[in-house]
Image 1 (tube, rainbow, N blue to C red):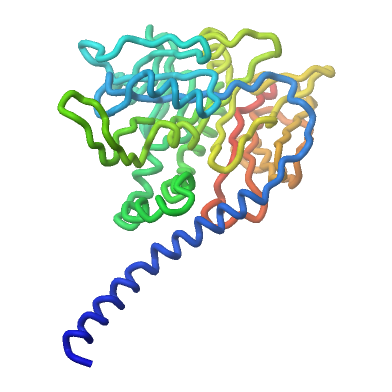
Image 2: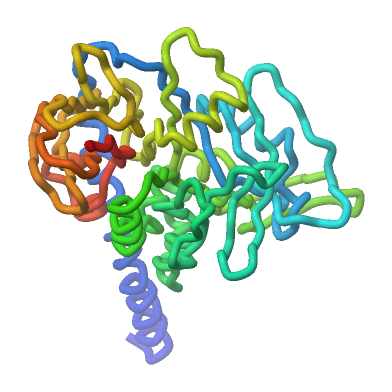
Amino acid sequence: MTRRKRLLLFVLLLLLLFQLPFVLSLYRTARLHRYLASLPLVDIPKPPFQDIRGGIHIHSAAGGHSLGTYPEIIEAAKKCGYRYLFITEHPKPHSLFQQVIDPDIVTIYGWDERQGGAGEMLCTGDRAICFQSGDDRPVAAHAKGLEIFNLHQSAILKDSWFNRVSFFYHRLLHPELYFFKLWAVDPSYLRTWDQELRNRHLTGIGGSDAHQNIGLVLQTTAGKRLWALMADPYPESLTAVTTHVILRYGEAVTSDSILASLVAGSAYVAFEKIADPNGFSFHAIEEGQPRPMGSTVRPGAGLVAQAPRRAVFHLIHNGKVRQMETGTRLVAKAMEPGFYRVEVHLPDPPGDLEGKPWIISNPVYVK
């Protein structure tokens, strides 16, 4: 064998060795796909409340550093089964787009802005209702809620050259599961929330922080898009994390009812790349009547949680796990004052899911 051929063989061998970590990453994704596909739906009782899927903390080009438009966001939301959107733009002197009203989705237009020492806040258009975002702590006194997960921050925590290159490899196999390479649940967010809950009602929300601004785009000088390969298209971001609002049956789905339930804490956060949470419920039973998340009940009230797939329920009382139950249902008594919330995990998960929740409920309060 000539020296040139040996050199060529050596280069080819190096190229093959370079592929191995990415092939292993694809193998883990294939294993994760098999695991998720093996989780059958189970029959559970109909939840006592309406479950309204939606998303919070969404940006368009109107607020800068984004490529999306309001029609694109609304169409993506429809594909994801949303019934409400809370779009929060960075304030600009002049809005780039006119607000769009769609009969199929309640769209709330608001702001994402820093408010002095309070840090970054997600507010309604009149700034009457604000939820704290980002990693700014402590939590502002006027905040009605707190982001307990932010997709953008998660991606920053998991950012690496390996994951960036891995994105292109994952175009070949289950690209919808590439999210799990960027998914990190920061426990400090949950600790801060639990600490605040000891002293006041504070709604936990999930922020998609969707921008649709990372990728390769080919467009004309007139702005017509010819081709795009986006790492964060709206449908991917909007299914990564959702905030479900709980309403009573028969109650109209309006911006007022959505915001009132968010402020009250009648909501839960779900990571829907794992599975559709439809059918989940966590509520109290007092005097034979169901009371939604965010309610205050007396000691001795019952607590019920259920999920549409076999799962591991963590009942958390005042920040500590009080009870764990594997199955499709958890039943407990709230005997001691404080707050009770539920985290739902999957049983025997593969490494990409280990220690990470599928669903995080808001609390029921006991006084």
